Image (tube, rainbow, N blue to C red; front, side):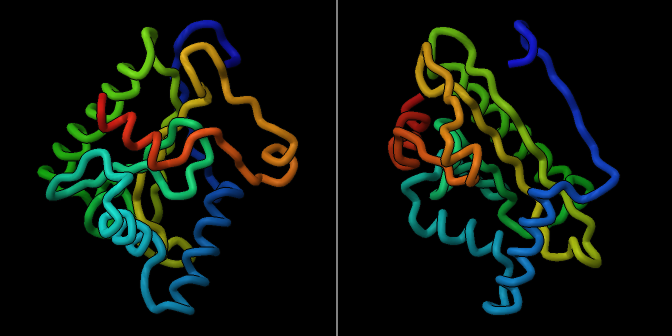
Amino acid sequence: MTLSHPHGQIYGYPYLTPRTASMLRQAREFAESHSSNLFSDILATEIDDGRRILIADEYFTAFVPFAARWPVEVHIYPNRHVHNLTELTEAELDSLTAVYLDVLGRFDRMYPTPLPYISALHQFRPEGVQADGYFHIELMSVRRSETKLKYLAGSESAMDAFVTDVTPEQMADRLKAL
C-alpha cells in the first residue's frame, strides 16, 4: 500500500492501457479462430465447470478464475454480452450491485480485519478495435493470509507468470463458505 489508511482511487484513461490492448488482441484472435467471443466462452466454461462459481443469478455470475493471478481474485461477468455499464438494464444493475456487495462481504469475512482489495471495471466501446470487449469486473487482493501480503516473485515481476500457494478451487471453496 502506498498509504497507511484505506482509500480509493478512480482512473479513467484516454487511451487503451497495455493490459486492455492485450486483452482485446487475444479476444480478436480468439474470435477469428473460433468464431465466438473469448469472454463469453470463459463465462460458459466457468458455469459448465461450476466449481469456482461463488454467486450466480439471472443476470450476473461471480467466480474465481481458472488462471487466477492473485491469492484472492474474483471476476464478475454479466450473463449476456455487453460492452459497458451503460448497456445494462435496471434489473441487471440491481443484480450487479447485489453480487458485488456479496463478494465484498465475503472478502471482509475472510480475516478478522477487512481485506484490502483492488477493483477493476473493464469497459469497452461497442465498435472498432474494442468490439470484442465484454464488460466485466475483476477484484483482487494482495493479502495471502491474515498476516501476510503477496509479494511478487521474480517470475511474476519479470515474466508476468503468476504463482500462488492456493488453487482457484480452494479459494472458491473458502469464499463460498463465507
